[in-house]
Amino acid sequence: MTVHPSVPARSIQELVALAKSKPGQLYYSAAGVGTNPHIAGELFNLLAEVNIVAVQYKGGGPADTALIAGEVAATFGNISQEIAFVKAGRMRALAVTGTKRNPAMPELPTVVEAAPEGPLRGYEFETWYVVAAPKGTPRAIVDTVNSHIRKALSAPDQVKFWEERGLTVIASTPEEAAAHLQREQKKWARVIKERGIKAE
Image (cartoon, rainbow, N blue to C red; front, top):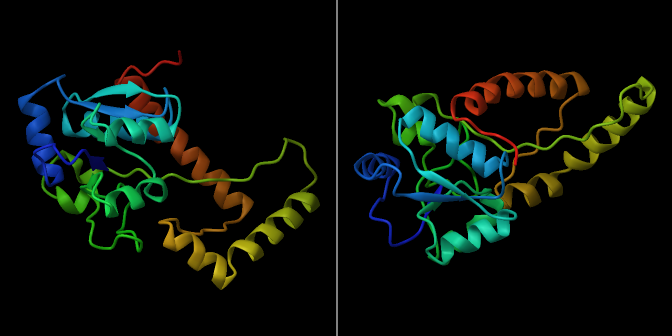
């Protein structure tokens, strides 16, 4: 989670206090309705009981550009996209949204670490990627593709490559991926309903 350098908040708790003092007057950039930055921002709003207003842009690049330009106060972008801007001082990072600190920026606390006593103690948002096949694809093909992908991603040089960009290689089984998808659908259905997110 990052803010524009002009925002007078240097921690998650300070950002929550600022948002509470200015309801509906702070804005965050998102990459379109239902995208990761949008859902992450609305989970933050829901748990912190604030209303930082989403401004939709056509993708993550324009959303980051809006923050750099000072059009919005904050964004919930992907660390791999924002790490260079943070290091250059064009954005100020407040926390990572995952369940543990990121090796690419180990000095940053998680949202939960940054606000352990408040309503945000349940906050967690992690971007993930999965390779999917059409329903009915023979299991032998699924297993072969899965095996090759896991082998390629688990190579030490690949693990290092992705970690330097703030990404963690999981390389799970098809069953683990399906179970994760089901958990995510259940979790985000609540946020979508309670924050009134609708496709445009």
